Image 1 (cartoon, protein in one colour):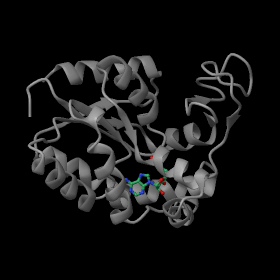
Image 2: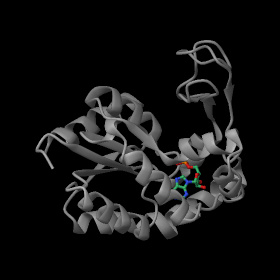
Image 3: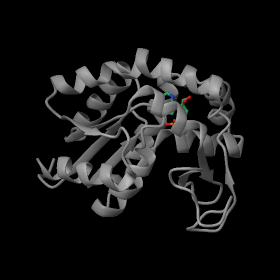
Length: 221
Ligand code: AMP
């Protein structure tokens, strides 16, 4: 592992703003943004075997089985553009995934360099997810109140139509938050124990304010 390598994980509940911050970090630090949720949604849209297997879990707000997701990440991290650093968004989500990621990276002489937790109170998460819209073309995220596009329903960047994710309805949102508390939040302690966890306060903050904290945390090493 070289000293300049940034092997970063973004941790936080659904709606905490991981995707938004990930876009900014990937652009600022020239590392690939690896979102397991995006990769799984692409597989669902393409109708691949994996996509078909994953779809029922995603629509229920449950986690896709570890073996499936780990396979996807293993292949992605082996690609050339991920050798000098990467940004993981939405992975790991279980202790099992975190442990297997550590082994995978150690096999290649690498390791996780920083984990950034974006902390947002639960009530705000529900509000953010309910108003969230995504671009069909480039995947950019918006919020109907907090971060609306210039032209209603259309992406500022590529002009494609915006849509609401099928798992952003209230019942599924509640389930996803429950799953986060039970299965993903234990990763906070896991990475604290590894000495790599840093926390950004995301509650009541605009994306730029959160990014300013994230940059400081990334530079603080
Ligand atoms: P996201 O876009 O990160 O909110 O992910 C959307 C959905 O994809 C989640 O609710 C899960 O069903 C599935 N998913 C994404 N990442 C993972 C992961 N690391 N482990 C298990 N399921 C995942």
